[in-house]
Image (cartoon, rainbow, N blue to C red):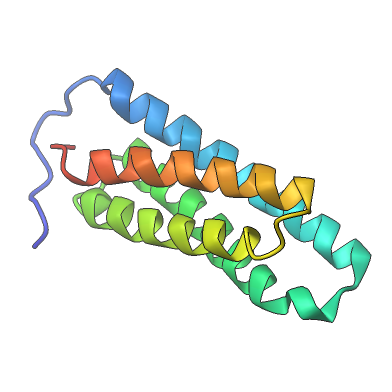
Length: 122
């Protein structure tokens, strides 16, 4: 269920700013990790690449929607948390890869913050 856009926009809370920052950081880490995976040319990592692509796009869109105070931002935050969880799990399927471990950590942080924002009033 979506919420109506308020007639006046309240100042952005620190929690929302922190969530936007976490989304953008996660987006960047996912993009860098995709680039690294592509340079390696490892076809076995294609499921990881799909998770990275989904997470990268979802985090960027989530941040955009929060910044413009979209009435769909709460729902997007929940979807973003799910994409981040899936990406973290995919990245951890190769536990000895330091870059994938850093990506998984960023995804988990973003997921946690987005879940909290999903329950907040935007």
